[in-house]
Length: 278
Ligand code: PAF
Image 1 (tube, helix red, strand yellow):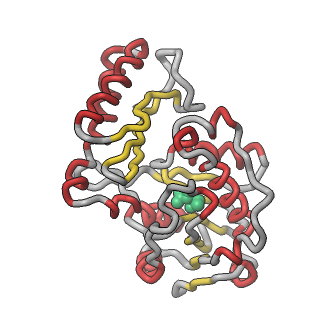
Image 2 (tube, helix red, strand yellow):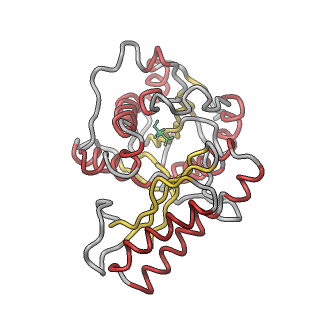
Image 3 (tube, helix red, strand yellow):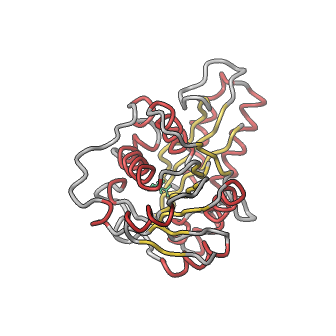
């Protein structure tokens, strides 16, 4: 079937009626190959694939890039169609938030106030609220989220589990450019010089992982501190470069537990995030 773009909840619900397996990929648009890879994961598992495009004001801080976040609807619909998406749900703010959103989903502080949540206060309240609302609207059987947003994926998984939402959450591996840079809509903000520098974030995560494997978990504080210094010396403004437990993103204590290295840093005015399971 050819792709359809729907702007209202009523139209979407009518289009989804009777579908046995609804697959869902929530996005904020300005799509790249990474998003299309998420659609391709949903496609063979679903009778219908829905992608949403909605730049969610609730998850942007007052000094963040809500106003300049790229809106590229026509191009997004074209690439979604080529990836096998059936329906695009593209509500405007009046449709999704007809009144100020007074009821919000507050993820637990131990998960939502660390790392991204520490540097972007309220971010995960905005994400969890819109994702919960989109889940109520789309009522998907499965939903695919990129592993690049590692903490977001964990919070959504926990929300679905604790709220007993009947939705399978599937992680999509991070799609990278050939030089290792994780694909992100925000990469478009980088100048040519910054774009050439940007893969250093991934390279540094790889080196951190290698050092932990060689030197053990007791070396983590030194590895993190040296990584922060190394990135700052290249002109970045790092928020965090850290090694955490994969299970709850807390500092590791046991040498055997599976780990993940996570990073967020500003290059010029562009804030990039990345992670690597080690
Ligand atoms: O990852 C994103 O693009 C957004 O946080 C999401 C999940 C679409 C919610 O607005």
